[in-house]
Length: 184
Length: 329
Image (cartoon, rainbow over all chains, first blue to last red; front, side, top):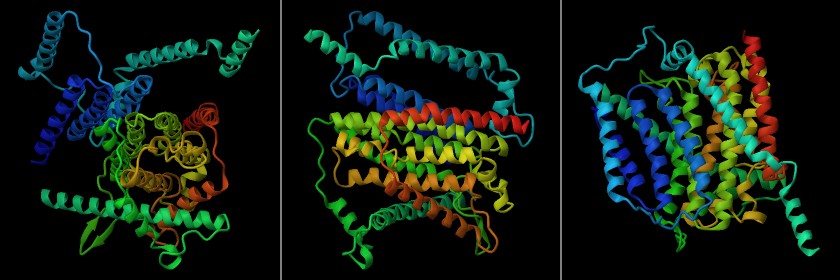
């Protein structure tokens, strides 16, 4: 009973939130609604008994990803409405409708044919879902996991390289030199 | 059966909300008194005995003050932002076991709202979602100081989140569980089995990160009056500002509980002192430490803070994990 109530509450809230994200013209509204929607999605994980994934959803998406988006948005004036500049409305609408239908078909086909089952059901008794995630990650999916880690490392190093081109020169010093140059 | 659990949870939630909100309000008075005595002043004295009723006076002032919303602010977000701070702080407490189990009229009560087996991760994650309060407040105020303050607060929370997560990893590796109840039971054998002895480095790092995550001095960059007025809270008045305040104090209490349970033996009884009293002593001592540091230390600059976080604390935390791993193997 309570699970049903909770499920419908979370579904309605999530749909409203993501609706705001898509339809709102104000970047600040869209951003806050996206963050809220991410948190509501974690409710589904808790309902399904996957507490670990639910918390990871909160930490990763709401805690880290959205905060970085918000940081990027601090450089713009988020209080004004965004003027959208769309030239080919028909192409845009048909493409978005086709992709939406495709995603729905891809996601619902296995459920419709009742062909969905977990590849690695937790066969061991008394093992929580953190331990199961760990077991599967470090046995079956070890190589993709490590590859993802290496990719993250590469992107981190390249990010540092891009930023640190003129790290040895202080920004304020630079301004000082430029001023001097103008005077001379 | 179902209804019994629902009613029990609702009662626990109401108790936690009212008691912690009361404690948070009381902590403001304690803070003013402690700071005053450390600076050889008297602090609030006029309202009630030793100024205890100053709390009520402050509360009345906050509730009856005119509520001003700036003309050019993004109004809905501006109004939602202060609510996020206490909501996240109190939600995080849902997974904190406050006291040991006790029995009332033959009914065993576990003083934790929801015993999920990823307790510590939940508390840290939800508390970190509380950074949306300063973030949205700063972005919706359309005020330069608010925006700068929000940027500072958020970057501070995000950076020290890394340190506190890595610091907690080492003791969790030893215990092998994320549940706060398991963590508490691991240290059941008296003072010698407290994790602070086997993980002193993790304890120190977590306490420093705790100061940063609750925006306390020496890391209270938002209260640099000389630089950014009052940070993200510049445009707020009355109870909207009060909500940020309640959130901050609730977070302080959560961090004190986390440190006591993780490193200082939690609510295990010691000698003849029962467990509930033990944890209250630890929490009070820790909150006093928060106030003591505020009285004794100056602010740090934002660049010094970032330098401390990324160049000193994070490598130390990684080293700590490495050494713990080697010792465990």
